[in-house]
Length: 254
Ligand SMILES: Nc1ncnc2c1ncn2[C@@H]1O[C@H](COP(=O)(O)OP(=O)(O)OP(=O)(O)O)[C@@H](O)[C@H]1O
Image (cartoon, rainbow, N blue to C red; front, side, top):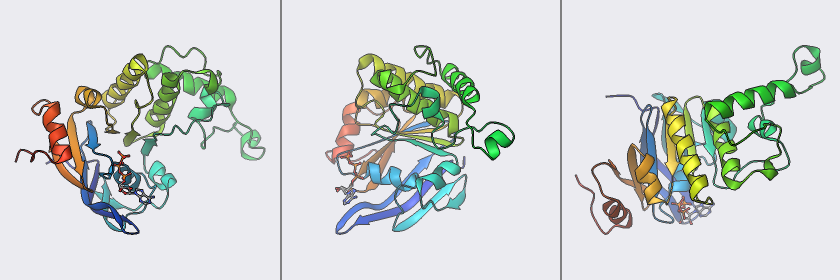
């Protein structure tokens, strides 16, 4: 059997009396897009937060490439190669695209200018940003020096996805990346997600949008009442059956 890139077993997360995760498992295989679907409150966000270091689970284990890991902060997860694109976009509108791509890990100038005077290598960052955006085929962005506040919602989302793709060395997690987008912008972001996968990075995609999920996912993890209820193959399960399993109207196929 292939070793999952990212695996969670028996995750429990309680918030006071609410149990958000009641022993949840998850497996992300190399090179796949794993969609995570579930009704409101099923524990999707809590699951993703536990995998990305945003919450520390009360119980359970997370394995990265088969090795146990414990993330106390999102930075721990990032340092381990797990990049997360959150629902509320963490882009800084007044900064330009290149600066956004490198937010928190800016390139410094070589020599004392960088090491002592902490001067930023702006030209280097723009060049690298251009390279990343080109690699992801975001041709609509002409100039990496453009301020993010002048971009459309889809272009901003593309910048966030590009950042995750650029720095996520092992896993990219996307929480509702198309939720706020129009048809054309959603299309561009879905294409980006496919490109990230095709470049060899596995992706976890949380979405309520069933057509999007069925279009891009290799497997679909169905979360229900804080647990993984089933994993289904979008090629052999219909959208209505997936929704029925998600809401409890139908038992998953054994
Ligand atoms: N910080 C918190 N404090 C208290 N309860 C919380 C907190 N975060 C989540 N919960 C509760 O945990 C349960 C699972 O929430 P979670 O956000 O993980 O579900 P979800 O599947 O992502 O839902 P949605 O699709 O609505 O975003 C819910 O009952 C929620 O109210």
